[in-house]
Length: 119
Image (cartoon, rainbow, N blue to C red; front, top):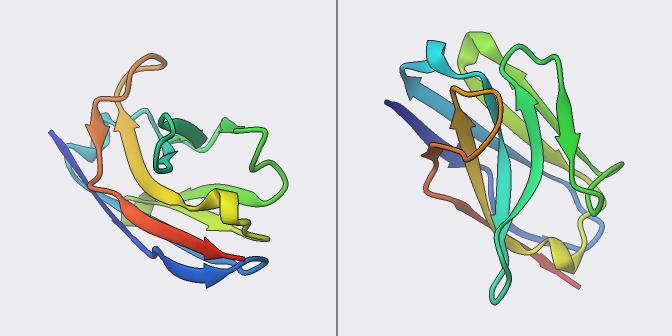
């Protein structure tokens, strides 16, 4: 099992920056890929950014390209999501995810952290 704990959410104004952190514990050696999803009220959950645990490959949703950066620190078992130029439409609960497989559904989810961007 892998446990994921997010932190760093909050209330910010449009145009501001915020950095989310997610620390993994448990069988972290089994993680192949990790990333961030988000879900806004009344909307479907969407993938925001993903990265392989080795750091070799990244993915970004079109809506966040050029504004968000995903990174990880293997020594700290932590993955980060640096969010710049935030927009009100970025308001959502952000979830950290991880899995031991190359692709497919994500097995491990964090509890989520709220990000609210005011206009």
